[in-house]
Image 1: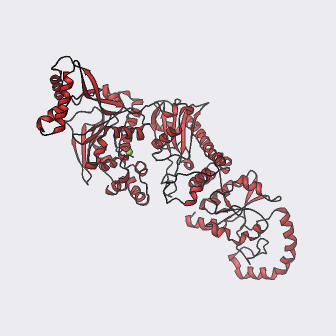
Image 2 (image 1 turned 60 degrees about the vertical axis):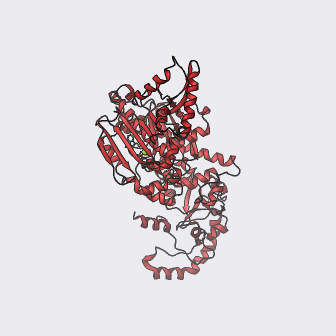
Image 3 (image 1 turned 180 degrees about the horizontal axis):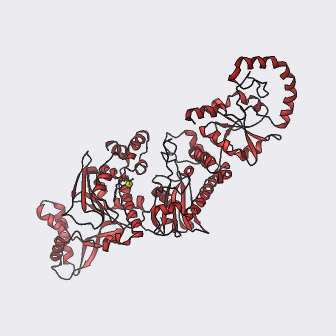
Length: 637
Ligand code: ADP
Ligand code: MG
């Protein structure tokens, strides 16, 4: 916990976002359950799904109250009392490496602990429909207490967090600060968020004794009463009795007397619940009326990541199934995306049915694995409202939605290319963390995308045969004709095709562990001399992908290290003539070598593709390339 707290220390503000998002999650859960059993919601205040935040300066506490699902005794122990949840280790590992940890906490499900950034003790009072009301309490140490709450205010249903603020956390008891934070982080929370604020109001006084009688009201006031307005008239009056030597209070006393002298009006401070968020869901609004700032802010909410996304798309699915959707490409891949750890079929798309969140980790994801980096929401009126998660998975409606989402996601990616043409020199925020490669700063938008998510597109070529042709257009390569020091000089397959030699009928590629070793390969010598372009494949996934692709718009891919490699027709003819004589001349040598090497090679023959190097080991036409063999062996295929 110390590490979590310390790694987040520079950005304490996040605690409120995390706790409100937990409240919102709990409200989503009860709202979902109530779809099939409305009795679960209960009656009166309990049935109102909302979040209330209240600061108590005198007590030094901050309260966050929700009417969500609540937690049973067991839930409290399991969810709050155990820090060894699976995400925690991964979080600690990443936190040690990362410079900016503010986006880590939500992703790893350690959000609750962020309360200890500002509080030295947290009291959680919770009531779940299936259990009695319990109080869980813990300081930032290794133990917690839990007991049944028989004496406290009964919540009906839901959870109240009371943060006992540290001395340096008291800023967060300031109403203005709280208001700003909630507006900043939580404007797209789907439930009303109220903040208790203090307001000065003029009230009419009926008689001269009004002041006394109101003070009486105050002492009798029922703190449990959830009225919209609670009077709190000059409560300093009580204090002034005890602290007689406080000058400030005497001055206020004088003011109050003046006010009483005025005929029929007086100023009172009242506690008022103020609603801070509007909640017409952004996806139901007209895209033309939504600003970029609003889209970016919504991205922070759904993507749980700070900063602006690389791209977004907001569209309506029409036809057989109607739905609305907003999808984003994040500015960075989620941490676990390429970590090589076993990945479940899981994406970051939230599914809503008639504006009710049904699920945000759909067992059978809405997007295929290769697009799992995309975040966003889908909302449809056409899904039966009381559908079970199991039924959802098999539903035809879902398949229609999935197909459309993939199509739109690919269009969104293609859309980034257009930006490359518009922007002559790509701008980047200058305070981008310094661990990013410097040449990434100059990269154009699509190249930025490619550097971050190219691997996913390659995976898509392998896995999504229906969209293979579309995906092939998104591929980018370093080649023998691109300037490989220039961050923006990458070739698309279309560009390769345009640059092909007149009589060339295949797309040449060569693979190796890195650019250096591919570039220096003897296989390339003659091709480059003759002016052919060769794709450089350096990622493990590349050759797999090319094998799946087979051809690009009818033109086949050809490894230049394969035995059956041939030049373009014209060059081929030329070489053939020359070779005939040479072949004969060197027959004794090739024969001798084959005999000497025996089973280690399948044949030895004269090659026409070398210019400076004496000999190369080429792969059999039907076998793996040398590079592929290394990869296969490493993965024990
Ligand atoms: P995460 O929200 O990613 O699961 P957190 O550390 O933020 O991780 O919260 C841990 C768990 O505690 C939640 O998954 C939830 O089960 C429970 N929890 C936290 N806050 C609330 C709340 N206000 N109401 C109900 N359950 C809650
Ligand atoms: Mg959370």
